[in-house]
Length: 245
Image (tube, rainbow, N blue to C red; front, side, top):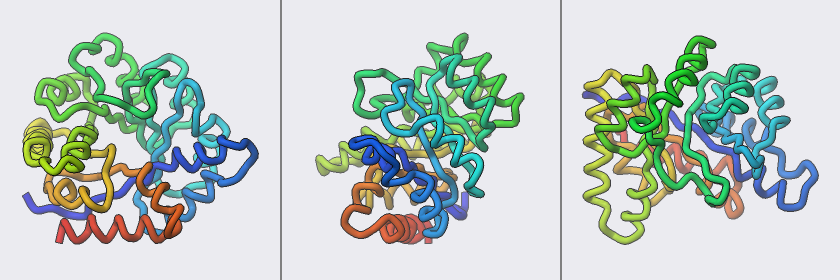
């Protein structure tokens, strides 16, 4: 398979985290989305959590009305989030597991074990013209469950790979990602990936030819403290493009 352009979805959640630390309006997630667009992002990702710890309903409404880039709404499989997604009609909705006590998303969705819960939500999102993605571990059982649910996209959880890379032994986790991406291709499911990716570890993942998109946020917002958001995104774009060259 020949690898083409690898899309970059920039997650701006933690711009809102910084804003919410003091309240008020600064820094503005909408401004971050505009900078991301100028820097070469292909889409904007936001996670509207049940506890609204970063992105808020108003942020989502403002983004939907002002940003030309596709918006990818990360959401829990709840009636509340389904209603919000149907109201705003983002380009895509990525269903993720969510626990209130977690600092960030800790694992993949159990698409196989939650089929009956997920099926009507996936169906209603698809009927509304929203591209559905499921955030899952790079595990064949979960990928096959996603395909049975009719999700056209899966996003592979790269957190374990990122942790293994930090420990200096990422080969096994990278092999899992590679096998999962190839399995997605066989299933006819578009494959994305994200979580914990940074300049040091992104290249081997970006080089996987079956991947169509990476979603990256926390590292970019953190790096922006030192170099600015536009420069951080452009550097990530450079690493991704070099891996695909």
